[in-house]
Length: 116
Image (cartoon, rainbow, N blue to C red):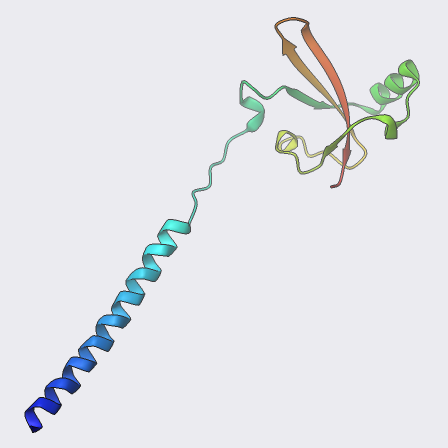
């Protein structure tokens, strides 16, 4: 009977060791699956992204005088918008967006930079 007890102790020990190894392997596998790759590219270079540019102070003054508008009357674009990534805008800047169109040729839109 003494032999059976030692063999059951050793099998229990090997089961615990195997379980620990399985947990380690599972953690490594899930860590590899959940890690997402990071890609760096300039979104402004993409064909489907229209041209975005920050207006100068003179252009802003001319724009508001010409159309008799206030800055708050413009639609907003959020400062964290992906299209503004390389421009480094400040809150309150006016962004000129130039889109090409098959029917109109080109269209120009203006947005005020805001924080969400």
